[in-house]
Each structure stands twice: as structure tokens, then as C-alpha cells.
Length: 164
Image 1 (cartoon, rainbow, N blue to C red):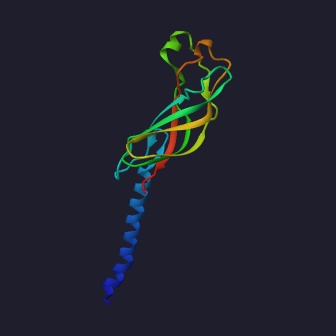
Image 2 (tube, one colour; image 1 turned 135 degrees about the vertical axis):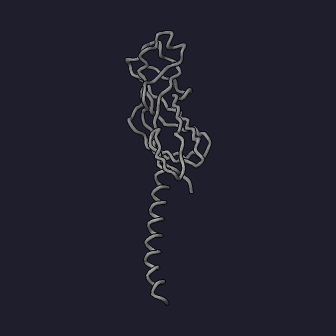
């Protein structure tokens, strides 16, 4: 074996490790999703998840009551996503126009916790609906006109790519 090929081996190994570390780090960064923000690199890009939360229609809310929350998650990414937590999003709970016009200004509707740990898988370019049992409530301070309303609750999710 020549002296020049023996010197090239360690250099080749160091270059290979550096390339693997750089591309592995870049791939990790592009697949991390947190809230409605994602990390991106030149490897690719992601699209934020869209969430909608509505109290379960079969369990109407009234002052002092809890209900399940129906959560729809839309994943427009080209890769599957695994959602690991759901928490209140920015803004307040809103009610349908008819109840708002009837005087429902203080909904008193909120989530029962600041964070819900979940394990939801949403395939690429699809939507899935999930249920968070007993996760939404209406307080006794809500306006009377809010009873029977259709409420929309802003949500934020955290998760990561679930690509194989």
C-alpha cells in the first residue's frame, strides 16, 4: 500500500463524518414542528398545521358544564406528522353569529387544561379528526345568550415529522 493512500483514509473518514453530521442536522431541523411555526433549511420546507376545535355537538355546553372537544388537524405537508401536544392558541373563543347577535359577548368557554398530551398521526396532505374528552368548559360567568351556541376555540399544536 502506498503512503499517499494511507494518508487519504483518515481524511476521507473525517470528511464523511462531517458530511453526515451536516446533512443529518439539516434534515432534523426541517422536520421539527412547534406550534404554528416550523424550522426550515435548504433541505426542504414545511407547511404549518391548521387546527380547528369545536365542542362536541352531542354534549351541549351550558354554565358549569364540560364537553368533549372535537379537533380537526389539517396537514398540507408532503410528509406525515405526529402531533404530541395541543394547547390554547392565540385569541379568544368565538361564538356563531346568531348567538353573538343575541347577546353572547362573554362566552365563558375555555379549555380545561393549558396543555394536552396526545399521540396523533396525520398522513401527508390530509385531515384527521380527534376527540379530547372533557377538555372544554363553560363557566357560570358566561352570558345567558351563549347557551346552545357553536363555539370555535383557537388551538396550537406541537409535533414532528413522522416520515419513515
